[in-house]
Image (cartoon, rainbow, N blue to C red; front, side):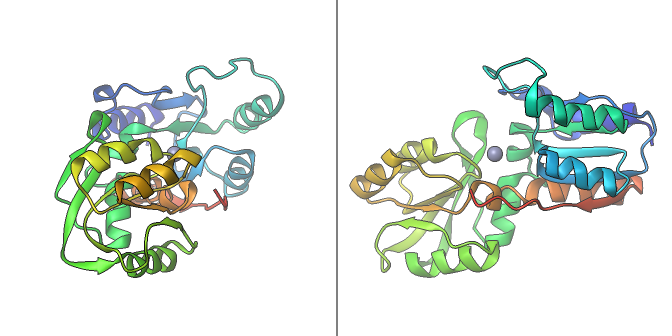
Length: 248
Ligand SMILES: [Zn+2]
């Protein structure tokens, strides 16, 4: 398919225009015009680009791309190396940040709910990105933490008592520890995100809302992969998801 056709489709499918974001969403680095094979990954790191080039990708699609607001804009050092690789091999780079967190089918938060079997009842927070719901019956925090460890392949950092019952739950993938306060206001028993900050611990302890830091990378693997699978099924593109491990 043509790059322009994919670009138009993605902007519409992911409702890019609906979001105020910290980076440009969509085509970030232009490569060849015709696409047969795509690679998806969480972050457009040099390791992912190397692997995508070896796989013969015409386009790389990521959740974390380039050109973040407030970031040093000069194309030097590691940024130069990444962009040089894309340009030298004529590979397109597409990035989708908040639109991919929020999407109702391939979004990171909906996909995390699928992996962890979390009940989706509604949305909250900035631009309706985060999700919440309630289990039919409460489960102990330790059981939920075990499920997170098993399904994501990474032991989470948990703030709360093992036997604390969790019925109402909210979650937002990545670095959404700042949303804990809104989750507390929502009245949930536990909040899951990727990262954790020093102050998150105190807020969790003092509010009584348990906090599970399940990993930024570990919680954001699923949206971009689901997007790649969707595009492969719809347009007949060859698709490979490449997981470049990140302990954070
Ligand atoms: Zn992220």
